[in-house]
Length: 173
Image (cartoon, rainbow, N blue to C red; front, side, top):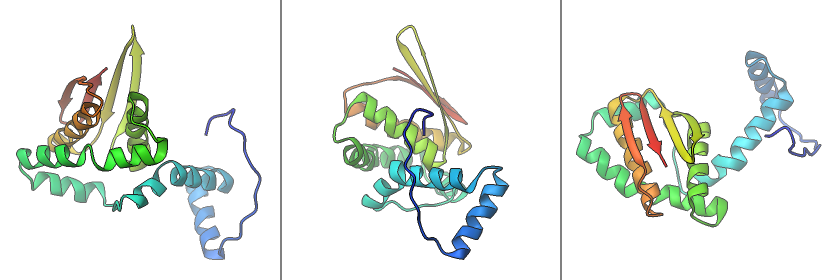
């Protein structure tokens, strides 16, 4: 939530056990229960509710990494090619109603922020945007992310310069 965004004051009833868990997590994160609940609601409104619509499942990074490592590079590339324009496009259209460079970038930002599989960094210099996704999924994780990104931007007939390493994917638009 940005500093300038308006807030609304509302009251909700929650179970004692849920509130106790929120208090424990807020203390562990060194934040207030109010801030934690707001973060949870923002994550739901910006990401989770759209994942529900497309039937997404949650899995741990370690389980996903094991699946990637058990797959051939070709199978990973094919999975990214097939799933890249499908699920992300559905989420983008459900959230924004239009497919554009900006809505694709919002999807990538949201996927990394709320999906937890990578860190997103964006730098704009001299009219060129450089996006870096840093992750701990190894080389095959980079192959998968690169394939998804190629498919996403390919839907707009945009072909960014892309490079990757074992722990990052870099796009130049």
